[in-house]
Length: 67
Image (cartoon, rainbow, N blue to C red):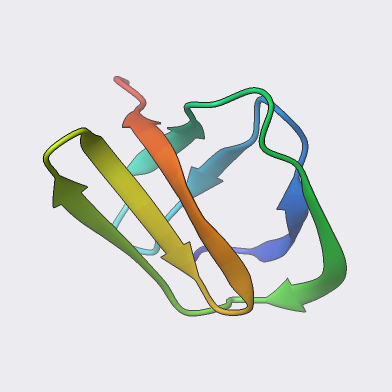
């Protein structure tokens, strides 16, 4: 992940080091944690859409951000 991550707030946009950006798909998902610089992150394509995995955070659905 590019930058630091402190949690999900309902409309969080996450930029990965490869330049792709992803927006949190479910506004009801919230997670607060201690800020972490450049945590490991991965996007997995599944049957119901894309899921993001970030170190120390439960998986959550994301949508690609078009630039």
